Structures are given as structure tokens and as C-alpha cells.
Amino acid sequence: MDGTAADAATPLRRALADGVTRIIAAVQAVGAQNPVVVIDGRSGAGKSTLAQALIAAWPLEAPVQLVALDSIYPGWDGLDEGRERALEQVLAPHADGRTGLWQRYDWGRGEYAETHAVDPALGLIVEGSGLLTLGTARMADVRVWLESPEPSRRARALARDGESYRPHWERWAAQEDAHVAAHAPARCADVAIRVP
Image (cartoon, rainbow, N blue to C red; front, side):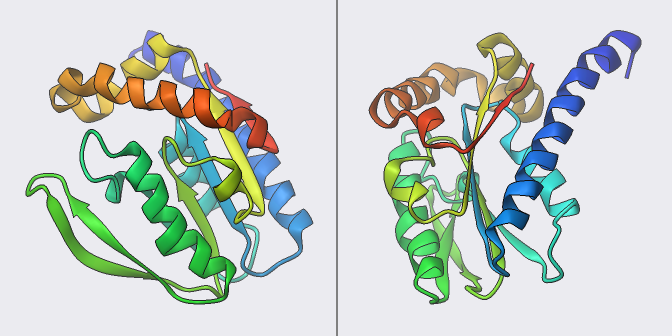
């Protein structure tokens, strides 16, 4: 990494580290052994990086499970359906003390594949664009919204996913715009993180 890239990454790392600290404090305040954290934000905001850092710093003795909506969305037009599947198959069962079962979407084949289980006795992190609504907020103990400017998000997302994402950026962003307009996810959050 050259000096310019390292300089740009430092504020990002600081913002995410501060976010992890705040989320951990919120998780500890819940006082449960199986708390649920939902993380929303537009593409490239840093949700996956934040989730991995949160797993590494998880404050409870039992491990935490992660479900990323990127594994559930049914393709490039599936933001809303991915959220609904996460609500019905992951969040609602966990809240009811039942084992959740969700299927991974195979983007290459264009169909759902193997099934994964979610243990209701363990903590849970669910992250993805379009996730935070009043409905999903009721199923979560800690609700997180990441905010980041479009140029930074786009640069990170395209660096991560390369040319396969470029033709779909506007298509996906339109679904995110509709989600923000309909559900005001920032207002549903108790932890808001501004990422450069």
C-alpha cells in the first residue's frame, strides 16, 4: 500500500474501530448471552469490514454467528427480498428461540443452494444493505447504521468486487435509495457510524 492509500485507510480504520467500541458497549448493556446486532448501510459503507472486526472483538464468552445478506439476496434486483428472507428465516426464529434456516444464493447459477442453520442460543450479527426497518429493528438488540459519502463507497465497492459490480452499481443504488426513503434506517439505529 502506498503512502496515499495508507493515509486514506487510516481515517476509515479509526471510524470502524470507534464503531466497534460503541457496538460492544451496547452489546454489553443488553446483558443477554445471545444478543442480536443488525448492521445496515449502503454498498461500500464498510458493513462487512465492521462485522468482521466486531466478531474479532466480541465481548461474550460464547461465539457469535454472522449472516451476510450478500449470501441471501436473490441477485441484483433482490434487496427487498433479501431483507424479507433474513427477517423470516433468521431474525424471527432467533427472537422466538427457534433454530433459523436460511439458504445461500448462488449468484453464478442464479438459484438458491445449501441451507445454513442459526443457533438461537448464540449471539447473532446480520449485516446487509436494506436490512434496517421498523420490523427488523424490533428483532434486534443493537441496531447500526453506517453513513459514508457516495464517491468513497463506490471506490471501495468497485475495488472489492471489481468489474463484475460496475454495470450494476446504479441498479443497486436505486434499490438502496428506495429503502432509505421508505424505511429511514438511520432513524431506526441506536448506533450511527460516519465512515469517510
